Image (cartoon, rainbow, N blue to C red; front, side, top):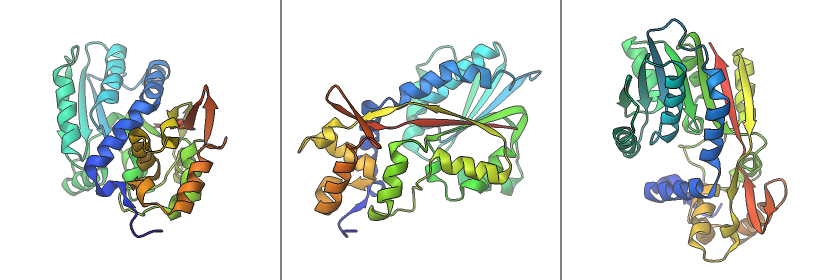
Length: 292
C-alpha cells in the first residue's frame, strides 16, 4: 500500500461530504423507507402489547431522518401510548441536526426524546458500571455495526436488554452487495483504520447462529449511481471514489495499477449493472430482525 494513501476517517469534514454524496447518489434511504412502510408495521405489531409506555433505543441514530419514520410507524400502531425514545450517537454534529429535525416536525406529541453523546460501547460500559439496566421494547442499529470492535459481544448485550415481545432491527449491507466483493478483494490494499470494520449480513447471521439468537433476514435491492466515477476530474466522482474505498483523495494517492484494477472491476457485473448509460453499483441492504 502506498504510504500516501490515508483513511477517509482521518478527515472528518471530507468524510461527511462523501457520505452526503453517497446518499444523494444512492437509493439507500428510499430502500429503508420502503422497508419501514411495508415490513415494519408487522414487525412491531406486538412490541407494545399491554404496555403503558413503549421504550425505544436508537443506536447510532445519526441525524434522525430514519428514526422519525420508525417513530411514526410505532405511533400509528399504538395511538395515544407514550413513547420514550433514547438515542445513542457519538457525533455532536449529528445530535444537533437530530434535535433541529425534531423541533420542526409535527405530530411528535407523546414522544419523549433523550440523546446520549457516546458510542454503543461507551453506552454498554456506562450501563454495566452503574448497573442501570433498562429493558427496551424496540432497539434499532442502522448502518452502525461497522464501527463496533466486538460485534458478537455487542449483539449479546443488546439482546439481553429486550423486554417481552421486543425486537431488534439491524440494517447492514447485504452479503450479496458489491460492498462484500469490494472489501474481500481490496480491503487489504486500502488504508487500514481502527474506526471501521468490513462486515456484511453474511458475517452477522453467522455470528447470530453461533450465539443461538433467533432472527429473520430480509434483503432489499438498492443501488448507487457511480457513473461520475469514470469521468476524469469529476468532483462528485472523486468524492464517491473516496467513499467506496474509504480513502482520502483515492484517485490522487492510489498506486496507478490498483486504481486501474478497481476501476475496471467496479464496471463488472458482479459489482454493478449498466442501465441507460449509467453504472449502478450494487448497494443491496439486509434488514435483520432479532426476537427477544
